[in-house]
Length: 331
Image 1 (cartoon, rainbow, N blue to C red):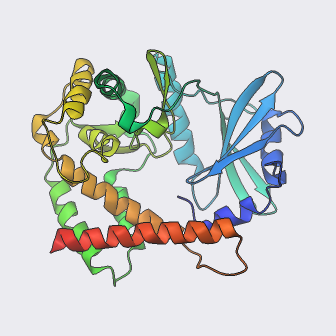
Image 2 (spheres, rainbow, N blue to C red):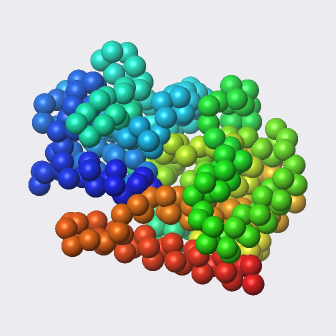
Image 3 (cartoon, rainbow, N blue to C red):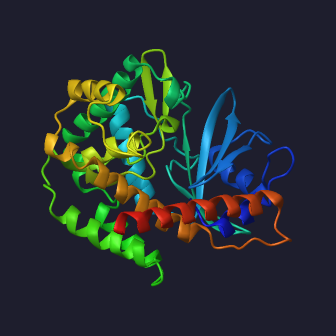
């Protein structure tokens, strides 16, 4: 989630037809058809769609304080590598200047932008998944992890690690967040004790939920690698299935067994690390909490548009829910 102040500034430029002069200026770098750029959503990134001749593309951009160019380039290198290995991922598209990343100065500041091909497919609902679909989900993640294990090029990309995430948490926790600090100390010590080998640790997707998968018959496309991070591979399982582990870890749950059946078809997994799934879920919650604390940099105000005040209320409620959860964990 980007800072709400950054979101507000850009969204205020969007008209009733979902057009923005800022997005138009950025899309021009890729030769977008005049007047074709339309807003999709803003969360961690701003997403627009545009037309060029007979083809549609996704335009993604961020304000300079949110994402840095070198990390974006590393993500795009990863996508091209996975595409070349036969995985169904979006393909980065070169600008008219032959660049995969364009940095554009606008009236609102500097933005870094990329463009991607569109993968066709649908997002299934978690509650509606069959056992066979859970198996396919796990198989897709296992294929991704095995591909990453076999690519030495992914071992040293300019992407953050779990240690960088813990540093981010420290930088965004106020001294008053006592329970969160205790949680951070506990998880830091735990993570330092985990094995780091080529089979257990490497670059992961980080957000392999159904929202980032596009199902098209028997093929599953994977999108949104912008949070890819060096972590334990098992963490991707925990983060993907975290709704399933909300109350307790049940290694005999039918859906979990189906997921792991598919995963093990494609790659090996350390069974001892599977037992650590709840700790990985705790780490994800703490990191999300810190990201929300950073993002909510505006208070409710009568001069804000309704959508913004509503979003502030929603995110503050999530922050409080996480905060209460940390208190329960540390008691």
